[in-house]
Image (cartoon, rainbow, N blue to C red; front, side):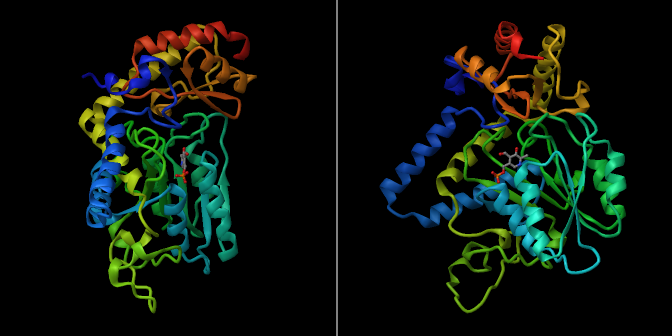
Length: 375
Ligand SMILES: Cc1ncc(COP(=O)(O)O)c(C=O)c1O
């Protein structure tokens, strides 16, 4: 069975919306069936389910070259980042949070919520469809506690220069949180080589699973001194101690976890991550470079306006086109069997390992048909 054949949606649709939700594979379907089977046949197999959580943690650690002890299983990026924020002290001189204007709203909102605890949020504005690294240099100084950056912008596909920003932040003694949701599963990501201090992401997009499972990576050296206050019984050193008289955080990144893990999503997440690992991230990256290249080339040849940068080094797996009636365009494409999405006035086209040139041809024919909606 080819990779594409594992995703039944392609029998009926042209799917280009992996930046929002990865397509459903046979493997993920089977994983959900297995969860129901285990529940049905075993009753309440919590030992197995805790073991599944550990397998998910290890799978994610393997994807980003981290140690499993540096990974917290979370129910969303929001939960992981909130736990992290709750562990940071904004009481002193170093109380500034530098946030790129490309962040997903949840991240900006969580940092603004820390204003009640003394944090001061500084935004780094975009210049057109990019944020020049110099703008980070202007914003980061000795008062910066943490720099919060996304790898690829969910609105326009623009990719930040992570190593350069990390270097700027560390030179001033600031920490770095990378939101890798839009790149995980599309390219090799090595948290150690990138030298980020924290990394967050989830499984429902390019990791090919579904809602309910995300992860927070915390660099080993920082774990002992960070004591989150947004916690739960799964964050404790001994989950089953059932101690109501004390908070005894796990010595590992599990201290950033909360309550009962999302077991069904964990079954699916393991299956999704396995598919990605067996396809190989270098191969996926090379394939996506080809497909995004074909989309850009086809769009520019037809005179459509790219909202993403043209330079392949400056965008992710998401290519965006400007439209003056983007909601209508998404609907018309859907009626043609082409699944896309939008943010701002941008049509979002996000291929993955399962898309090929046939899909690009179908997409281009449909876009040409609706060119009145593309500026
Ligand atoms: C870059 C990025 N961060 C975070 C999220 C979502 O975070 P959460 O898991 O909290 O819903 C998304 C998309 O939904 C995203 O694109």
